[in-house]
Image (cartoon, rainbow, N blue to C red; front, side):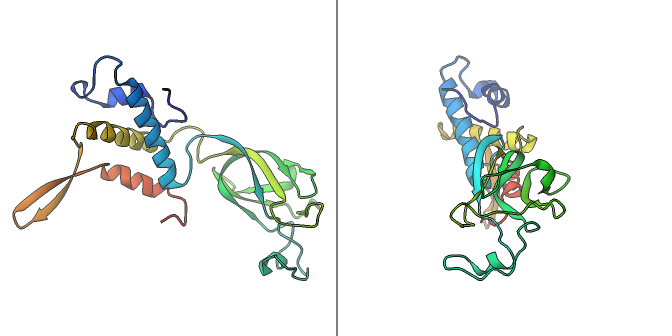
Length: 219
């Protein structure tokens, strides 16, 4: 198999391993590829984000005008904001916008909106400039729910961060060694009899890295 959207390569894995710890021929290549890809997807699962760019279209609810009377099926906070200045918060990390489409089907030009934060990526929210006259619109049925579409490049980064690369290798190599009952990571536990080394799947550095990158609100 080949590695899809992996945070390390097979050659990285082989360089990370001790020469005596892996077959010298290509017998284990499919296993290595599988473990690297599995470690990459486990990182996605734990952090609730991806470290490669994904071309996708996401739908969002539109803010509505202040002063509208609440309607059945709409949360009250929909009717207490301004349709141009209110931010739409994303459900994922955004790297760049390809097309932003308003609820009425019109394309909103990049000159008419701002992305947040201003000076770094990934982006987490968008708002319309209050000087252009462009406002968030409902769809043709008058609904403000899931009527704004944003096509773009989604993900935390288009190039794997160095510490995520290292975490992927640590996880994949640990899984490889576990096939043979070995563990490269140990945690020290002090008992009445002295210090006992207990095997662990991943290093403390890897665990700290994954915690650092977890999206807010993820337990």
